[in-house]
Image (cartoon, rainbow, N blue to C red; front, side, top):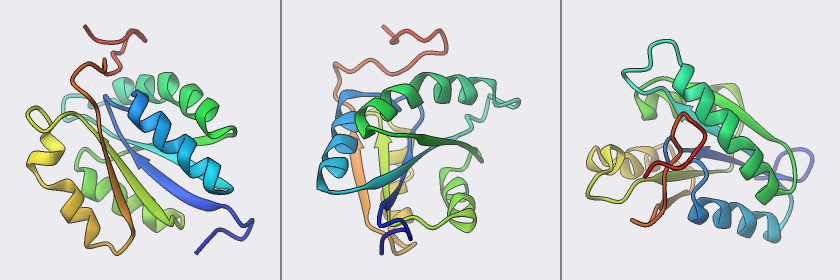
Length: 146
C-alpha cells in the first residue's frame, strides 16, 4: 500500500553500512520503479549513550541517500535493539517495506542475531543488502573506515 501521495514508504535500517554502494543502488532501483519516500533509521550503538555517533552517521549518509533517491530522506535514531528501533519507527509512521543494510555475515551482529527473520514477523517485505568486503563503512570522521 502506497502513501496517500502515491509514494511507497521505505524504512532503511543501517548503521555503519548506511551509505555503501549496494544500499545506494537498492535506493536507486526503488526510485526507478516509482515514487518513494525513504527514512534512514540508525539504531544507537550500545556504547553511544548520547547518540552522537548515530547522529554523525545520519549527517554523513543522508545526503548520499538523498542523491540516490532524488529527494528528501528523513533521519531517525532508534533504540540500540534494532527490532525495538524498527517497532518504534513503525508505530510513528506507516512503511511499505524495510531494507536492512548490514555488514558481511562473518562480522555482522545483526545477521548473527537473525535480525531479518525477526523483522519478517512484522509482516512487511524485508530486503537485506549486505555490504561487500571491499566496501568501507562510514566512520565518525566522515571518511570511510580503512
